[in-house]
Image (tube, rainbow, N blue to C red):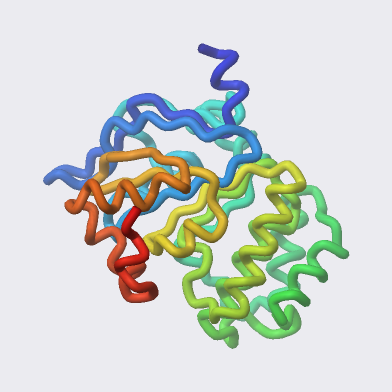
Length: 250
């Protein structure tokens, strides 16, 4: 058991956070292997962000356990954070700090990062680190969040709706950056409500609805999941807007 947990990038067992009235996360059993890109797919309010906050040790579970590289997400939360690059669904507000000052502050907390890597990521997203955070558009705030998650080349990236606010060109830059991180040895846990996004980058997908994991599938199985489980239709509403529905037929 302990050996399995050590080998897995993420492992949860009966993980739950009960907010009452049927809201929260319930009995999550999940394993994500090292160097895997795992998509966590579900509509808004399904429990994706709650799962991520439990993995990051930001909230206490009602029951169950969660491990990252064999470290207990609650007991060893400081050690876990050293291994993780985290992009929250809501970027923290850094006020009048300039982008470069935010980077320097957080890099200092990590003991330093490669400045060339920081500069490279900023350039590929056309992000001006000399501007104040409060002057950034929502898209530029998201770009800064991506830079902060990737800049220290973490072993695990936990990304909550990472392309929110990005235009199509910058979305493609993000997908390329993610693939490069994976090829460099990183594991990726990515939450989304957009099926086409998950199709673009993920190896496997977990589908969550109303706080419960209802299916885990290889990417090539997704079309069969949609066609055989019509009660999941609301999860893929954004996909239907982007593509011709007949393309989902096996």
